[in-house]
Amino acid sequence: MTRVSNHRANVKSGRTKHKKSKARKIKDALFYDRKTMQQTWQTIQNMKERTKLACCASRAEEAKKRLLEEKEELEEELKEAQEELEEMKKELIKQNRAFAALGRKAKKERNDALNMARERYMDKERDLKEKYEQQISELMEEVEVQEEGRWAAEDKVKQLEREMEDAYIDLFGENLFF
Image 1 (cartoon, helix red, strand yellow):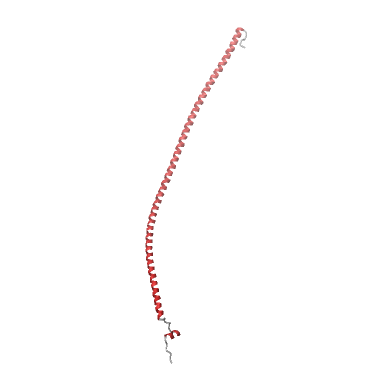
Image 2: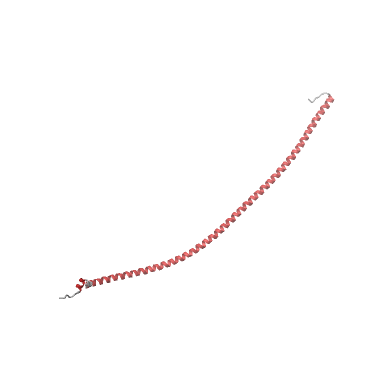
């Protein structure tokens, strides 16, 4: 007798695959539906998160643009401030040089005035010394002349005394002056 092949025999012999039972199919379908629902729910949650993230990203982009604009404005202000600072530094250097030049000029004028005053003083002192030396030399000459005159007068007085003594001796014969 010939054997009738059934599915179970074919599965055993390896000619076909094992079929799931009806209960298993239902259970798998429920699992699949649950799994699909979870995946769908997860997808929905992911979509919500993506929209939130997209919203946050758009806000972040706007904030970034705003910050970039503020940065550009601040850089422009910084550039202007640096230019003003450079101008002020140049002006300050210019004023410092002018002040130093004025200081040097004032010092030179003061030194020139002091030198002129010193020269005038020295000239006056020299003139006064010459004048006093001249007066002293004139006085010395006059003193010498008077001393010579006094010596001459003393000599004359002595000569007159001698003459008087001689005349007294001639007249009276003796010397009374000793």
